[in-house]
Length: 168
Image (tube, rainbow, N blue to C red; front, side):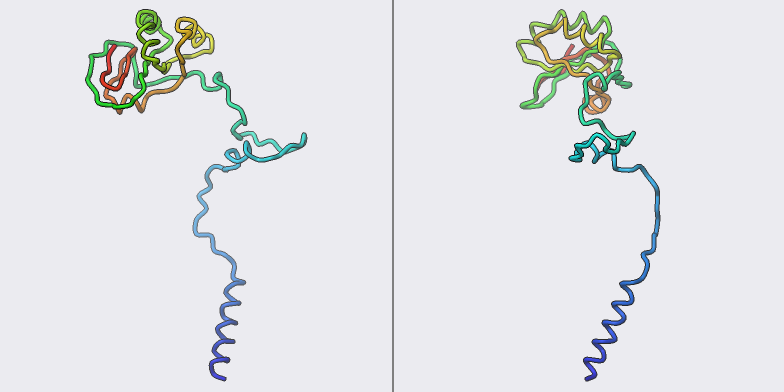
C-alpha cells in the first residue's frame, strides 16, 4: 500500500510540473530563417504569401554582379611551385585591360589545359560578355577570390594555377 501511495504522489508531482509555463532564458532576436525555406516550399497558389527577404528560387548570373575581390590587384606575379595533385587548372582575371591582354596572349595554352577562369573583379554583365568573347572556348565564372588570396599568399592577378605551379 505504501508503494502505491508513493507512486500516486510521484505521479501527481510529475503531472503538475508538466503544466508549468516555460521560462525563456534569452531571446536574442536575430534574423528570421523563413527566407531559407520559402524557395523549397511546395506552394502553388497565386495568392501564396511572398516574403521580401526570401532567397529567389532561381538565381541568375547577373544577380551575382558586381564581383569585387578586395584583396586582389593587377600586378606582377612571381612564379611559385606548389604541390596540388589532381587540382584543375584555374586562371584568375579581371575586366581590366591588363587581364584582357593576358587572356589573349595565353588563350591557346588555357584551352589546351582545359582551364577554368575565375573573373574576380567585374562590374557589369557587358564586361563579363567582353571577356567571354575573347575566350569563347573557356568557362568564365564571376566569383570573389579573397579567401584564395589568403590561402596561396598571392594578391596580384592575372595568374594561372596548375597542380604544380602558380605563374603569370
